[in-house]
Length: 69
Image: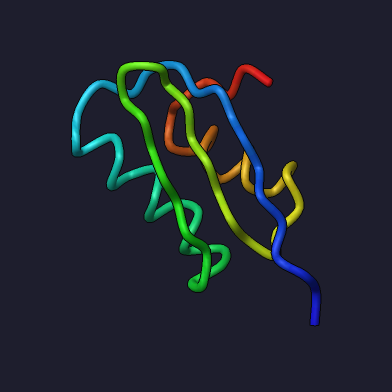
């Protein structure tokens, strides 16, 4: 069993609660135990998950958002 990691991601294109839900759902579809925290004004997404950063970024990108880092 892998350890949980915290990923800080800068995400462009989120503007509302629907975006927050879409990003959260995208990550949790890959890791149902993941916790996702979104700060809309700054575009900061914090994810606690066993997934590697690349997988988290890809899940968010597939929803149409731009992961900047």
